[in-house]
Length: 181
Image (cartoon, rainbow, N blue to C red; front, top):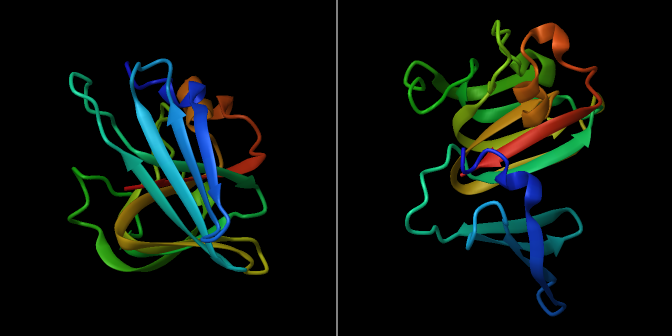
């Protein structure tokens, strides 16, 4: 419960820019959880790529949280994803050994597991790269030095959380991508 709404109230407490290295640095605090700070650094490498560093030091006495990463909201036209990692079905820490490593593709709507009660779904582990594109193949590519997890869904976490049946999910206006490490 401590972490349930923390992401909704994050505040940028400090930001900096280094023009020499083209780096933007942010420090976020989360009033719902006192003393928590997250540092994010974006370094523009060239006209087509950037390097992102995300750091959370942790804080004694707080419970473990279910996930840590960065979430993106894109236009719904970015609905085709491809990845090199475990798949093709969703997989999590407790059920990933049966998912084979490979290159897979899906549409974000296909990543929504039709559970009777809508819930978190569509996660993929041990991912080396992931792309999210429109029908013309234009979009973004995420890569990591190590591996990461991702989900690409047509609904936000809160939309899924607030629906008690699949029929209560709203018309999809965006694509939501979570990159977790």
